[in-house]
Length: 314
Image (cartoon, rainbow, N blue to C red; front, side, top):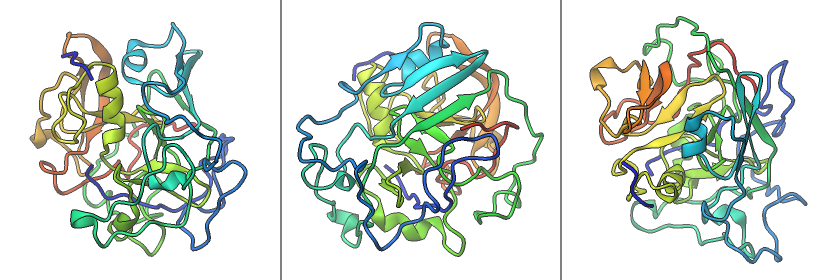
């Protein structure tokens, strides 16, 4: 199925460090929205930016020994091997238009308040270049969790099995993936109104991120020839990215374009089976992956809350 080529809700999230005791990356002391604009020398705003950044012209460097899945489906990233692990690095700059680039940037666009977005208002933050790196284990080890509604409670800091706050994965376009949780005392749905048309926004260090489905990663699939539509729910295949423990984030399809079996899904729309593409190539044996599909799986609309596998390095 190689043809040429939001929902949403997402969150401003909490948290600050994108790291645990083994991590070296820190995005900020807190990644919730603030009332003060945080433009800095690293802000993406610049009067010298004249070329629009797209999935067609962004910098992509993927080593030849990297597994085929990453070579086929990712752009706007650097990918290499560290032993058997896959290392993905990115500056986190979205290769598409966003209000959050700020006026004067080639990728700036007005904030959309049309249609059902008439009550939406942006947060004061601006996109800034980041230094993302995640290391994905070749053979992730399951935590043997029962991921039910008791565990997926949509509240931060209620379980040691939650993904940490901040960046926990990278999308196909190099943009940061956050978990589905908002800052303590808040809920994700309250922050919907600050999302741009790609269903994303930056926190106060400038880290632009997704919490749900978006056209951004689907534009990579279109550029790579795997879909003719970039509308979530309508693409030929829908892959959004991968998380630090090895969990894959899909949309309304499996990798081969077939619809997922909804009877198998846990409380965050996840299940385990071989990940096989339309050519019959098995990219991952018995790999846990989740589905974000707003029109079909309406009980959970975001990236996962609970970390299925044991290790998460970024």
